[in-house]
Length: 294
Image 1: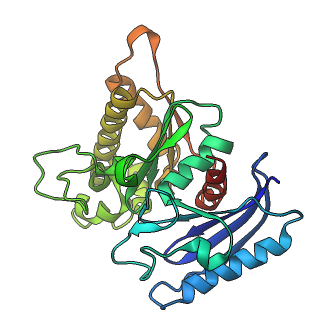
Image 2: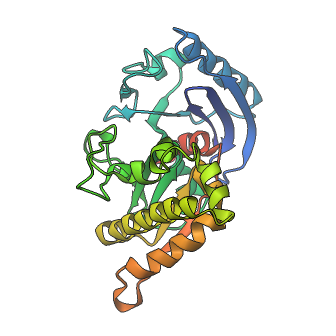
C-alpha cells in the first residue's frame, strides 16, 4: 500500500489530497468550505472529503494525515490546544470519528513534512522552515525527522525576539517578535497606516517609495538576523521559506540574501542555503499524508 489521504483543516477551507506516498504524486484533490463557527459542520465536511477521496483510491489506503492549527497531543491523535477557532477541535478524536487511523499535526509542521519528503528539503538531514504569512510559523527537521519537542511546541520560530526592548507583545507574550517584524498582520502598524498588506508594501518598495523601502528593508534585515541566529542554534543545511509573503519573490529574496551574507557565521566554509518552498497552497494536506511514514 502506498496511497494515503492528507487533509488540511483551515479556518475557511478544507483541502484534501489522495497521494502516492512513495513518489509524492497527487492522484486527486478537493477543496471544501470549512464553515468555521458552525457547530459540527467542519467535522462533517472533513468526513465527506475523506469519503470522496477514498472512492478515488485504487487500493486500500495507508491512513489519513490531518494538518490543523494548534498544538497536537503527544501521540498525534488530536489537537490539544487551539483556543478561539474551530470550536470543538480540541481533543476531538479523528480516528474514532472517521473509522480509520488518523495522525494529526500542526499545520506549519505539515508544511515542513511536505518539503522534507517531496520538496525543497528532500534529502536534507538538518533543515528548518518558516511559513511567512499573516503570522510566522515554522518547523525543524533534525536528523531527517520532524522535531516536535515537549508539548509539540518546537518550531514556533516566529515567536523568537528580534527586539527585546519593544513594548509590543505578540500572541505568545514575546516582545518584539519576528512575527510582529514581518507578518502581514502588523503591516499597518509598521507603516504608520500607509499600507495595510504586504502586497501593498512590496508594491511601494518596487516603486521606490521611501517609507515602503524603509519599512520593507527593516523587516527583511530582522528576518535575516533571525535566520542567522537559527543557523547558529540548529546548524541546518538548508532553510526553506514558504507562505504568502513569498509572492514578493526577488523583492524579498535578494535583499534577504544580502543581509544574511553579512550576518551568518561561516566557519570552515559552512554556508546555509536559503530556498523558496516548493509547495504552496497544498503543503498542509501533502505534509499531513507524508507524516504517516514519519
